[in-house]
Every structure is written in structure tokens, then in C-alpha cells.
Image 1: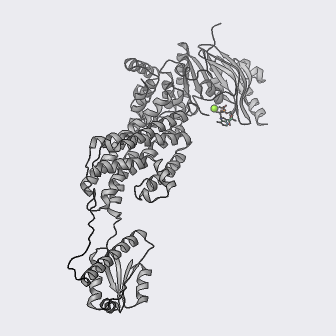
Image 2 (image 1 turned 30 degrees about the vertical axis):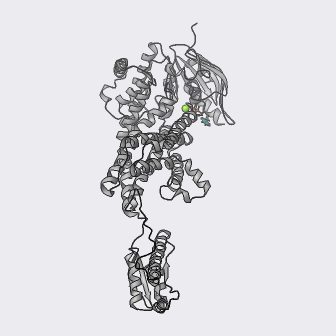
Image 3 (image 1 turned 180 degrees about the vertical axis):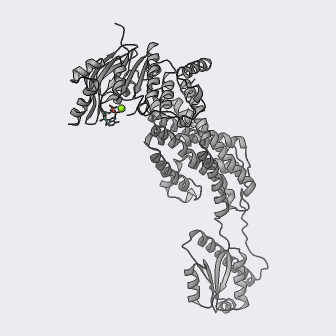
Length: 244
Length: 370
Ligand SMILES: Nc1ncnc2c1ncn2[C@@H]1O[C@H](COP(=O)(O)OP(=O)(O)OP(=O)(O)O)[C@@H](O)[C@H]1O
Ligand SMILES: [Mg+2]
């Protein structure tokens, strides 16, 4: 087996008394589309933030793209792409300017930058929007632009935190086509979602509940492990258990 | 070196250009401040409304009252008949000064005993009362000398002190306010603009996106402040040009030296703003902290109140403010025409502020969300 793209061992994060992520151990293979599923507050965002070096783990270790995150948090930055739950676009810049900015920040040199920008723009069908202010885009286009910004530097691992929240079904389908396209080029995709149909599109899933990993595998395996016929049953069971 | 500085700089520049309101404020604030300070604020108080209670009504008393009027500090608005009317004029605010000449004034003069005249000032307004007191003392002194000389049989006064105010011969307020105003305007706007810059990115969620990129802290900080150095210089130019053509404030020394040192001062203030923004979580907190720091800059730097008159402790606090040192540079170059040979200590201190504050901001800033 090749080296995993993402590997965590007993990854833990506490906020005061609250343990947001507890003893999480995961291995994600290169090129895999992996989903993190779980109710609100189950620790999905916290996990991703630790993997990106944005939050210091309280315990355990994480390796991303072959680099130990806590030891070299800056070294992983060039190898990962991240789309935050609250999309962080500059709304007063145009689509083109946002892409150009991130291209520059990721160190793409001038000529290469133009070519790569054109490639990403074509891939995500952003041509017609290039001169529009990002703040004037609708939800679906914003997500797509944010994805573009996270992709420019050809990251090995792409972290997408609820990338399709608040996006209409047609735009979601487009988005998923893009994700499969990215994975086909060998990029590992780790995403979080609340949508069952999306979870079923992931090759493997991890289900979190109150910071614990409670099930791991394909969508049918996960449903069975939690004790529901379908993934949706499993999810609702879990939520009810959490609320008690 | 620092390959990600330029993309950051370009981004900040475009954002700054699109933010029309802020840009308008950046130019509007200095202009309005200049007009306000230049026209409205006069520290040399003239034409104080004055009431006269002349109980003697003689040529001698009228002569004396004329002498007061001739100083230009007193403008006689009414003659009253008695104390109650005088008090009423003060209470209503119609008068800020009163001259009371007692009935026996000419008789005392003639007899050679001490004649008294009462000058009453409204001391609830410190600036005007000071000016009135000084003027009144002056009038009395000159008359004393004249009378004594006449008694001694001299045709001329024994001594006359001629004061020559250098660097501001007309003693005009604008001449000493406008140079200082350059520093005050830069302090007010430059600190705030960067103080909210990082807090704004944090509030909008763009900071999280930015710190997962390979940009270094130094590239981020320098890229953020660099475009505003230009804004600071434009502000300064606006104040200087208006000061020159509206208030005839001279520019005696080297303009290049002035701009050179100003860049250092602007960087120091921008860095102070950055430092604040590493402490603040929200734009509002950043604003409050900037305002908190602004007040001492205006009061203790020597912009309006002379530092020599302050208790030692506050003089030290003043030394910890970049503006205090920059004011010396401004007045030195604009009014006295001095160069680096006189100003090098200030330049060193300002450079220390700039470098130290950037260092502080960079070391306080962390590329994590904790
Ligand atoms: N900075 C923080 N300080 C304190 N508590 C936090 C912080 N960030 C997250 N938490 C808490 O940690 C827990 C997990 O939060 P997290 O954001 O990881 O959940 P999530 O699975 O992403 O939820 P959602 O689906 O709502 O996005 C929550 O109880 C949350 O309140
Ligand atoms: Mg979340």
C-alpha cells in the first residue's frame, strides 16, 4: 500500500472542558474522495482545521501529504488547498482578481500563473464571470470560485468544509463533477457535508458524533455500523442520541 | 526576496481604491481639520468683549480706557453705571472682561499716591483670561514707566525690551498649528486604517483562508501597510499645500528631507495600527484601542500644549509617542529650516519606533486560529 495522503493517530482537540475531537485515527489514501459526516458540533470543522495547521492539536499526531503537521505547519501549506465553511473570498475584488491574488500568494510565477489561471477558469466555467465582483456572485458561483482559488497550486490534498451548503441542486451537481475531475488527477479530497446524497457519493465516509469516530467505511457499511437501513436513518438516529 | 509581498500589495491597493468612502475620508479629514484649526482656533485672543464702569468720568480715565482698547485685546461693548450692571453683563456672557476706574483715580494720580484700576476677567475661559491679564499688566507697566520718567524729568523711557519672535514673526496661530497638524492627521488616520485592516479580514473570514497559504507573516504585514504609505504622503501634501496657500505657512527647509522622514513616521504609525489589530478580535475593538491611543498623542506630544509645562511623568509619556518626535522634525524643517545635522536624534528615534513596532506586530501575529 502507498503512503496515505492523510493519516491521523489519536488526534484530539479540547476547547476548555469541551473535547471537540477525541482520539481520531484515520487513514485516507491518495486520490480518494473521503467524506466526514456528522451532526452540528460533532467536530468536523475542528478536524479539518487541525489538518490544515490552523488549530494546534491537544494530543495525537497528523500527517498530511507526507508532512507531520505539528512539526512543520508551514511546509504543508503549499501542498494543501482549503475551502472554509464560511467562504473567505474578497468580495470587493472581481473573480479574476481573486484568482490572480491566490495564484500569486501560492507562488505561481507570472507566465505559469496565466496558463494555470486559464486552465482553472475553463475547468470551472468561470469565463463569463471574470470581471464580476465576487460579492455580487450567487451562492453556487461563490463556492465554485472558492474551489478555484484552492486548486490553483495543484494541491496534493484538498479540504472542503461543507462546500455545497446553501447551493441549489443543479449547482451541486456541477460542483460534484468538478470534484470527481480533481480526484481523477490524483488529488485527495476530504470534504464534510450534511447532505445524504452527497455522503453517498464519497468513496469512504467517517461518521463523527460529539467528537468521536463512530463509523468508518462505505456509505452502506457506515449505515449498518450505526444501526440504520440507510445512511439517512443512521444520521437521524445519531442526532437523536446526541440530543439526549 | 519576499515573492508574496507584491500580490498582497496589489490586492490591498485594489481594495483601497474601491473603498471610495474611506478614501474620501482620508483626504477629507486632513482638509477639514486644517480649515478647522487654521480658521477657528486662535490662541492669541483678541477683541474680548469688555464692559467699562467709569466712576470718575474724567479725561484721565478716558485716556486710560483708550490705552486698554488700543492693545487690541479689549473691545468695549458697553458702558455701565454700577456694579450690579457689570455683574449682570458677566453673568449673561455679554462681557468677558471689565474695566473699573474708581472715582478717585485722577486725584490719586495727581497726589502721587497709588492709583488703582480694576480689571475683571472671566476666568472660566482660561485662554482669554490669560491674554487679558497679560495685556492689562502691560498697559499698567507702560503707564507706570511713563509717569515715573516724567516725574524724574526724563523725556524718554529708561528701558524698553524689544521682543523679536523668530520663525513666526507675526505670532500667527496657523504657523505653529499647521506643521503640527500634519503629524496629528497622520497619527489619526494611519493608525486606524491598519488597526481595522486585519480585524476586518478576521471578521469576513478571509484571514482563515489567507493563513492556510504559504504567505509569511512579514510578507502579509508589509504588503498590508505598503499601499497606505502612499495615502499618508498624499494627506501630508494636501495639508502642506493648503497650509502654504491659504495660511501662508512657510516651508523653509528641505522638502525631500521632510518627505523622507515622514515616510519613516508613517510606517511607525501603520505598524502601531498593525500591532493593535493583532490584539483586537473585531474592527470595533480595534477602533476603540486606536482612539484610546490617539488622545495622549494629541494632548502630550506638544501639538497644542507646551511639553515643558507638563509634570515630568507626562513628559516621559510624551517621549513614548512617535508624534512628539515628529513634531520637532516638522517645526524644525518647515519653520526653522534646519536639516539632518539638527534632527538626527529624532530620525533615529522614529526609525526605532518603525522597526520595533513592525517587529512587535509580526511576532504577535500567529498563523493559527487559536
Ligand atoms: N474556537 C472554539 N472555541 C470553543 N469551542 C469551539 C471552538 N470551535 C469549535 N468549538 C466547539 O467544538 C465543537 C465542534 O465544533 P465544530 O465546528 O468542529 O463542529 P462541526 O462538526 O464543524 O459543526 P457544524 O456542522 O455546525 O459545522 C462544538 O461544540 C463547538 O462549539
Ligand atoms: Mg463545521
